Image (cartoon, rainbow, N blue to C red; front, side, top):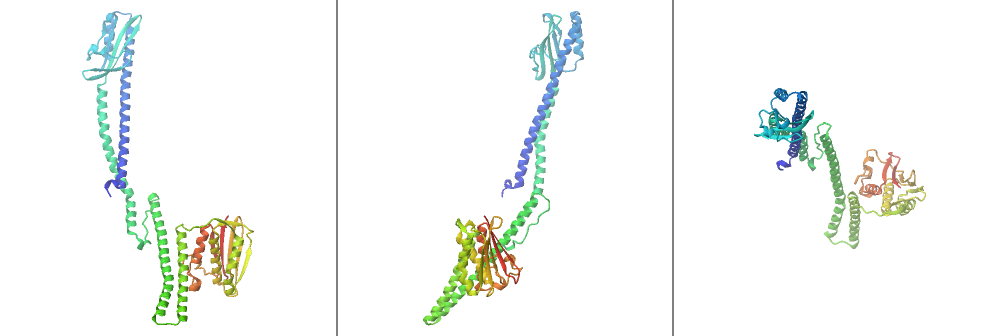
Length: 455
């Protein structure tokens, strides 16, 4: 990973760029504000100077030229240094001359408006105008030096230009320190995550309880690790159980074939050996089909048809087809059809298998001369199918695991009761139809499997 690809480096870079842009914008605004203030102040002084000259002329207009000239001279002495004035009367006679500025240059000032005037590299704000007093017209030229203001602006500009990068550099260093401090928990989470593998998914990240996004990130990681750990454990258990289930029929097939080939046997003995191999192959075929169905369901690849299914008629068909199994075990099957001919949309073949699994499971856990009932109902806009048996029931410690794959309670750990995939398949089919499947049981009082469909 290059340095620039580091999050803290990029944060520092963008923080410095934004800070520098902000400082430059602020510096530009400050410089312009000061410049406008100084310019307006100079223009105000010129305006007041013109008003003062006008007042002086009005006060001495009735006197002699010498008296007016003396009044204007005294007025010029009282003004601050850097402010210049010139007055001309009748016949362009000079009544007041400027000091420190070429008089010819002063009379080139903009007429009727305040503008800039330059003399020997120095800038002035100047105005040339006319005033009429008692029938006499006087020419006025007024200027004020901007040397101090220009010097201050130049120094202020250099200060701003020099300070902005320095402040940005200091802010960047502070930003880098803050980003490094803020991202330290991320580095810790990353290091801890690197140490976690499939062999130690039970390990969890140490999360600082800061109440911020990093705490939520750590908690989310731990929750994800918990789900991964659960998934991996189920996958390992699934693989181990599948291997265990397949090992027995494969061993039986191999052993039977080896024994049959060791010496010459009668046709009847060969026949019995082939029948044994056929039974085990059928068991393996059914197990493989069940595993493929569950795998397709897990991957969302289980293809279901969408058709209208009459629930009561579906129950009749399933009961009719499973009647021989119940008869062999001496089990009485009772139907209570209360759906009122209502139907649902789904895959009839898959729903048929769902009910077959539930009835077969009920038959296996119902004693001889026992009873199994299957009921349909339509409560509150739903369709429900309930399968109840009068068997030994399910232990409380087995109830949370009853729909898990390959799970078989202690009372059902035989090959005759299947591989332990039937109820897992039933749950998968129910969920693929948006239905809920649940079990209720009290030891010694049988069990109730309930499937609810939203219609």
